[in-house]
Image (cartoon, one colour):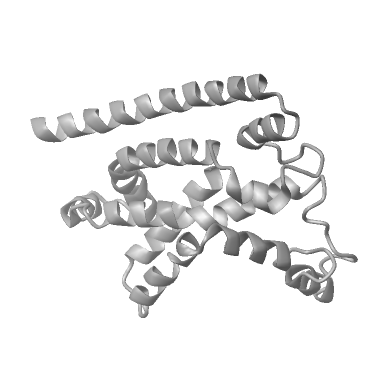
Length: 217
């Protein structure tokens, strides 16, 4: 989640600038978000395969490592799953933040320049405060969505090897349909439901608070 947020904001700031081919890059950055989950997962399984994966071939050929890395082994499986999530869902942060950047009044930056603010100061005292509300909403939404994600990791690793990528949704599924512990699986699902309800309440509270502030203004 942290990587998605940092990369998303950084890419949005770059795409907000004027440069040649900006429209093309704005369209290209949405590509991972539009790719079906099954396609993204099988591409990752092929690219990072220890035997015939393109990525391993490149890093071994370049001399960065002596032997292929087992990206789907116990030590690296969760890292690979996180990379898949970052690649797939960073575009959501990009388009959300970029939309907010385009609504920031240029007069705020002009006033900051008159006060002698440099680029970092303008980002810290103008851009970041203007992005605060939208970043809170993005964090809440992405936290809920990532918390209940099942298909990407299950298709990528099946929750293994061992329990290295066994997140709660996969754990509940395994307990229910492989262990036949339906009561225990239902308890896990209910706990997840309560957690998501709390996150949803925080999101709605923030949303309505933001709307009320605008109406008062």
